[in-house]
Length: 281
Image 1 (cartoon, rainbow, N blue to C red):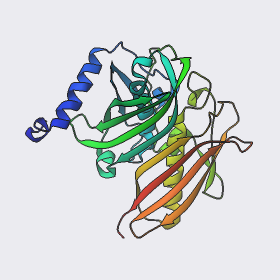
Image 2: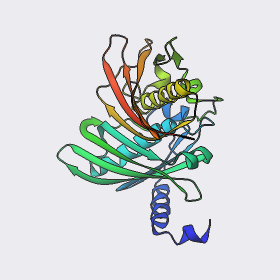
Image 3: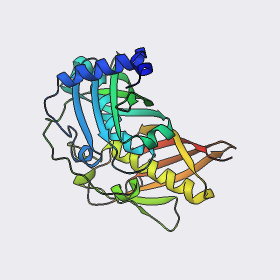
């Protein structure tokens, strides 16, 4: 690690919080089910008001969608604070990334800190850094406290899955119109409560957004920010979920795109708005 990073107060705080969380590590992997294994997420530990995890990039790409299961996990656990072992429902997540740094990173470490709670609403923030301390992004989460209990953590069997993109990893299928497609549902993408993992839905929508942007103008457009609204839980059944991508505004440098995930009957579950930076314009 360079001397400059050693002298960076924010890096020192991040490293200290990550180490404190690691000391409370119980050897647990995949605390929210199979999707964490799919995305290579390892829960490091809690040291309230902080929570930490790390993720090995599952695909060789810079699309920030692969960070969503990691972010959802640590933001929620830190937001709970003294409410644990009670649970919470994710309402919204905002993520901002440096696309070039993220593209070069093979491993991402995240530390989340609880900001405040008012009534049933909980808010937390997170930093994302490489193991060397490079800042990769920041995130904010908004949650609603629930009376249900957190699922019992288990020691998973992390598996390395060869995939060239998020589309391959999630087995997404696009219609002849590239703006619509399907996400397979079922145990592979479900959390312990039997609904499709919110991080998986967000990752799939980010993949759809990138696909539409690439087929639209043929140039390179990098996602730099993502806002995710979780409208309602979508049950994990054998029926695929449907997603739709809708370009909104196109400027000289930035493009705004929306995408939504639905049941086959048309019930909306998750909505994403992403800002993309257009290269070479």
